[in-house]
Length: 600
Image 1: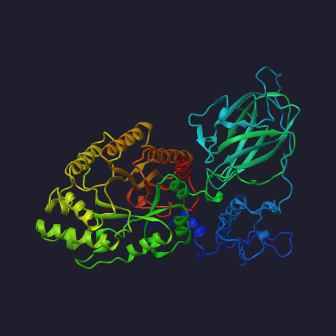
Image 2: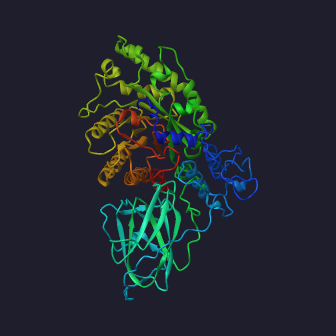
Image 3: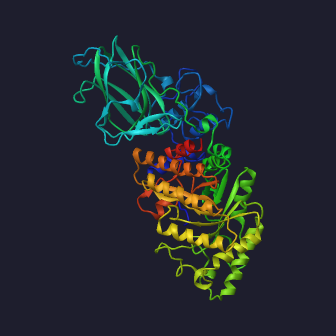
C-alpha cells in the first residue's frame, strides 16, 4: 500500500505523544500533589518533582508487570487510597495529566451531598409487577426508551451493556419500589466524555431531576468502572426515568439505603486486556492463528517506546509497510538494500514472531529505472526473476508468507491493469504465472499469495475477477497457496449481508485448496468520530475476526498498523481516519475488544 505518513500535529496528537513517549516534553503539573504522608508526592512516580507522561508510562508498565518497583515508594501510586495499585490508579493519573481532574481521591474528603431536597411526586402503590430498587438492574432490560439509537453493546468481558446513547436519551424502568428509602445510586459505566450526568426522574421524563449520578471519563469505552452518588431519599413506588446528558455505556445499576462511600472510580471491572495477562497473540496462538501488524518508519526510527512495546506484547506476526517493496530494496538496478528488511526479520526472530513478505511484484512503488526502461519481454522477465530470487533466497525459510503479486486487477470493471503496470505492458498477463513459478523455485517453504483490495465480497465485480484469475492459476498448475484479502473498509460497509458474502468467498477459495489471509485490515471512520462510530467499528472488526476463526483455511489476520497515531489513511482519504485498534494513547478501542471476543 501507499507510504504511511505521520498525521499533522493536532492537539490530540500532541497529547497522545506526550502520554506515550518517555522522553517527551514534561508537563509541569505538580499542583496539589503533596499528601499528608511526609515525603510522599502522589503521582510523582520517578521522583523528579513533576507529575507528567513519564509517570503515566511507569504506572502502566508496573500494572502490566513489566517493572516491579518505582524509583519512589509505591504509596505514591495508590491514588485512590484503597491500598492496592491497579488500573483505577492508572486512569486517575492519566486524567490528572490531561487536566481533567485537579486532585487525587486519596487527598479528598467525604463525598458532597445535595444542599437542597427536591420535591418528590406522589408515590404509587405496590402491584404484582413491582420490582425492588435494591436489586441489580441490567441496563438493557429497560421497559421503554425515547432513543432511536440505543442498543446493546459488548463490555469486553462477555457481558452486555447499553450504548449508542445520545444527549437527551432516556430509558424507563416501570413500577420500582424505593421503600424503605434509597439514599444512593451505583452503576457500572464506561465513557470517554469528560463528564456525563445520569439524571434521575420519577413518573415523568420532564422537569427537574430528583437526583444525579455524576460520571467522569473512564479512559475508554471498554473500561467499565463503578460510579456512585448520594441522592435525596426516595421512598415509595415510581416509574424510574434515567436521562443522559452525554454518551455513556451502562452495564448495570442499583440503589442503596446507605450513603455513597467513594468520590472517584473504584477498581474497574477488568476487560480482556493485557492487564489480566491475555493478549491478542495469546488468543490467536491458541487457535493456531497469527495476529499481525504492519510496521512503518516509527518502528525503524525507534522513535516511540510504546509502539515497540505494544507490538511485541500483542502481535505474533509483522509485515513491512514499505521496506520490502521493490523500490525500497532495489532502488538502482543490481544494487540491493536490505537494511530495513533485515532489521524487521531479526526483530521478529528475536521475539518469536512470524513475518509476511510484502510485496515482490507490484505495479506501484517501482523504481524509476524499472518503470522508464525500454525493456523487451525477456529482459523484464529476467529482471523479475533476479529480484525475486535475490530477495527470497536471502530470507529463505525465515518468511512464512509472501505476497508474490500485488493488485494486478484494476478498479475498471475487473480488467487487468495495463497502462499503469510495466509488467502487464511489457510481459503480458502471464507475468503472474512466471512470478509464482520463480517464487516457488526461490523458496519452496514459503506460502505464496496473490494480494488485492476490494476482492473480499463474493459477487462484487472485482471479487469475481480475482476469483477467475486465481482459479485460472490453479487450473494451470501455477504454484499458489492462497489469496490475500487486504480488507480496507469504510465504517458501516460491513453489514451482515456483506460479511456473509466475505464468508462465502473464503469458502469457495477453500474448495480450490487455497488459504485466505486477511492482510491489511483497517476500517476508517469519518472524523471526528463519536461513540456510535467506534462501537460500530468494533462490531465490524469482530465480524471479520469471526470469519477468520470460523474458516479453517484462514490462519492470518493482519492489521495495517497499530495505533491511530501512525496510519496512511488521513493522508489519502481526507476527513477520515481512526481506522486501527489502538487509539492515539495506545488504549484499546472497541475494535480491539471485538477481535478479542471473536478469538475467544
